[in-house]
Length: 361
Ligand code: PEP
Ligand code: MN
Image 1 (cartoon, rainbow, N blue to C red):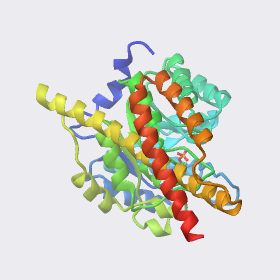
Image 2: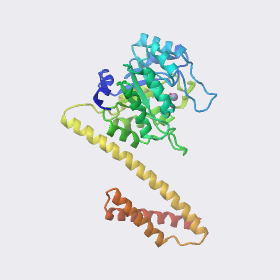
Image 3: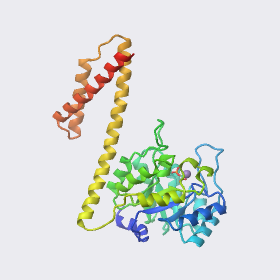
Image 4: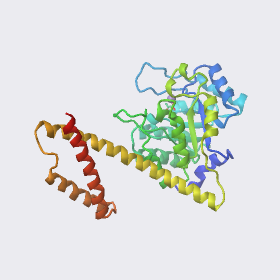
């Protein structure tokens, strides 16, 4: 993607001194609902109204969206409030209808980004458009697939592009509905620093109480915007009720969020420093999480050793681990001395865990 600075033109055109905020309900439900939410949002930081018209449901039987009818409601909301509008398109028919109803920004959903065939069909249908296209990450943690979708649109001569980070599905249950895997958008940002990056905290969280902290992490990582599901009565929403917040909560949130403004050399230096520190925080969180998982496994080994009357310390195994890790360290530019000290500490903690298991069970 040459000339990548151009990718930001659409974003710069907003002329905002804060990150772009896209807000609105998960789904358009009724005309009254869309209009009421738009009016509650119009005096907040939100410049773009979102609403799903066609809803991709993982399992059938849930609300699948009101369909084309809802596009008229978005048009009406735009007329009444002056907000721009955005909705998800998942096939060429959706594209035709969205263009006919003058939707300003089209987003590609996570379940669409996974399919290069469908992405290509949509890119062909949009060939040369000056509409903005935002591409959500695929449901699976695969940076190449995400970038591949961006490249398909770029090759179709669509230059107003951006990406939305909405988290990745995991089989394992975590505190998130979709694991953020921050390292993936960080890698993407390092490869394409000019490609606008927007956080969708709602689909990552799946719940209201961690939306703020997700947004703060994203802003610390220098994201360009936020897309937040917003409903005047979240608990009664027809889809994704648990994760939606009210326009009033969104408004308060944007006041409380720490936003880094552009400025002179010193400000830019501090911005860059905080971004790099936020990247380190992401990795540190992961290291401690992985250590916790490692110790859980050590506990299980402890139970097994106790049941079979085997000593905790197995020197042969310990030497094998050390040898393997020193080699891996070399490949990752880590000194032998550091790996030795690190693994001695980890091993010590593991033994401590196992001793506890021996005592307790
Ligand atoms: C949505 O934004 O409502 C949606 C369905 O998102 P995703 O494609 O991220 O699941
Ligand atoms: Mn949703």
